[in-house]
Length: 183
Image 1 (cartoon, rainbow, N blue to C red):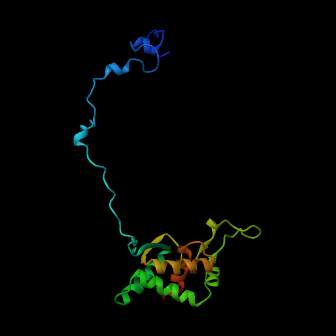
Image 2 (cartoon, rainbow, N blue to C red; image 1 turned 30 degrees about the vertical axis):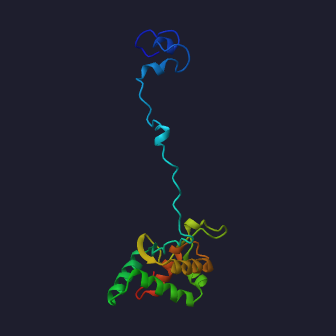
C-alpha cells in the first residue's frame, strides 16, 4: 500500500488501454517514419567495395621507452637527487641502470637477502610477503624510462634475484649504489 488511496484492480495494460500482452498496441502510439536506409533503385546500385590491399610484411612500430616506477625511501630519494645534480647529464634512468649494473656484478640474491627486514614475530611461521620490508624501499616514486631491451634485462635480474617485482631490486640496488648514509 502506498497510502495514496485505493489501488486499481486489473491488468496494467488494460488500465492504460494497451490491450492484452506486455506491449500489445504500443506500436500505434509512435508515429511512422520512413525507412532510414531506403534501397536505391536497381539501376543506381553501387558495386561492392573491394578490400584495400595491404603490404605483405607490416612491421610493428618500434616501441619507445617505457616508464618504470621504483618506490624508494625518503633517504634514497634525497641521495638520488644529490647524486644526479653533482654531474651533468645524469638522469633517474642512467642512475638506476648504473645501480642495477653494479648489483648484477655482485650476487643480487644475497644483496636482496641482506636488505630484507623481517617482522619481529617471524620466529616460527614465515611472514606474508606484504609484511616483509626492504632497506631502501619506501613511499617515494622514482620514475625511469627504459627501452624494451633494458626492461628485458631488468626483468631477468629480478627473476634471478627472486625479488618478485622491479621495485624491490631497484630500491635495494639504489640504496647500495648511491653515496651517503644507507638505510
